Image (cartoon, rainbow, N blue to C red):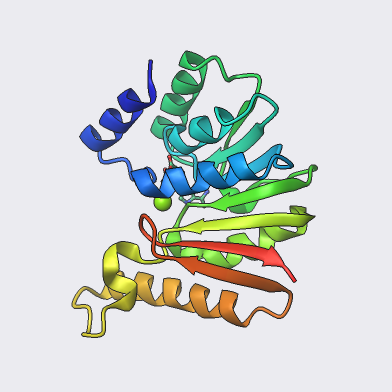
Length: 192
Ligand code: SAH
Ligand code: MG
C-alpha cells in the first residue's frame, strides 16, 4: 500500500482528508523541527494524516482520535498496512471524552469544526512549553471569508463557529497564531 491508495480511497468514499498542499505544509514543518516526536491528532478519519506525519521520521509517535467506527476500523487497517502500529495509537472515542497522560510537541486539530474552541481548551494543557498547535479547515471551502449571507442555516452556524475560533485565536492572551491560506486554511499557534 502507498499514500496514493489512501488518497484515492478518500476521494472515492468522500472522506475529508487534508488537501495535498496542506499535508505537505504540515509534514515540511515536522521535517524542519526535529524536536517534534510526540504528536496528538484530533480527527483521524482513515489514518491518512497520521500516517503521513509518522512517515517523516522513525522517532515520531502519533496518538490520534476518531469517533466514527467505520473510519476507525479503516484507519487500523491502513496503519497496519504501513507497519506503523507501534508508532500510531488510534483511540476510538469522542475527543471530548478522551483522557490523556502525556505531553505533546504538536497537536493537530482536524475534527468537528463546530468544536474547535472546546478542543483547543481541552488539549492545549497537554502541549509542551515550546509546542505547536495546527488547526485545519479555517477557510472552510471559502465560506469563512464569504461576505454575502449563507442560505443554509446549518452551514451558516458552522461557518460562524469557525469565524469565532479565528477571533478566539487572534485574541488569545497566552498564544500567538499565524494564519496560512494553504490547503483549506491552516492556523499555526504557539505559546507566547
Ligand atoms: N486528519 C484526517 C482527516 C480528519 S476528517 C486526515 O487529514 O487524514 C475529521 C474526522 O474527525 C472525521 O472522521 C470525524 O469522524 C472525526 N471527528 C469529528 N468530531 C470528532 C470528535 N469530537 N471526536 C473524535 N473524532 C471526531
Ligand atoms: Mg481537515
